[in-house]
Amino acid sequence: MAFGQKRSLHEGARFKVMKQYWLLKSEPDVWSIDQQKKAGAKGAAWDGVRNYQAANNLKKMRQGDLCFFYHSNIGKEIVGIVKIIKNAFIDKTDVKKRFVAVQVRFVKKLKTPVSLEKIKKNKKISHLPLIKQSRLSVMPIDYKSWKIIYNMGKI
Image 1 (cartoon, rainbow, N blue to C red):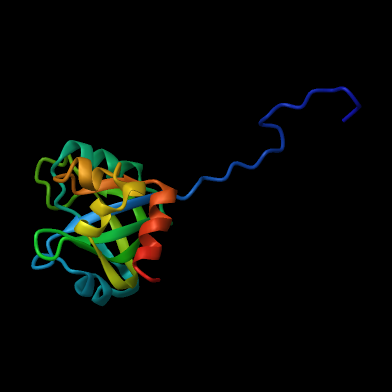
Image 2: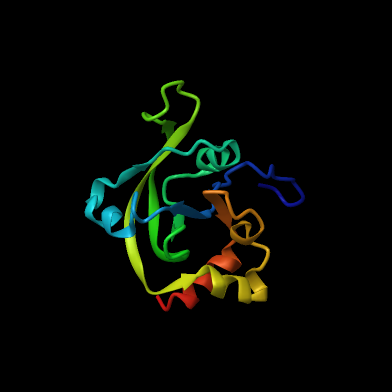
């Protein structure tokens, strides 16, 4: 390229998709982190989501994204991390075929579960949907908040 020529932003550029971070809620008496771990390398479908906002979040997830695994109702704490291993597909539990699921695989348990109470007390993460929209079962987590919670879990 000669001096002074302009180069297109797309010319020769490689686009890297940024990893996203999420939080998935499950009642531990229905599906627990231990059951997720037992699912092994093939993982398990994260299905049964019937809230449109949560379903839209599932559709935004990409293979390689990381998710906190949150035990809701019993415990109310982040107990582990799972990874998206398959993008959104039609949820087999939805007879009308309107909702989607993703496939997730166990990554690790937190050494110290991070309770909702501790999250609420931390002003740096008080903006999270976990606090603002407590009934939402699938939600995004910004990277800064991910790091804070990750460190709170002593990983």
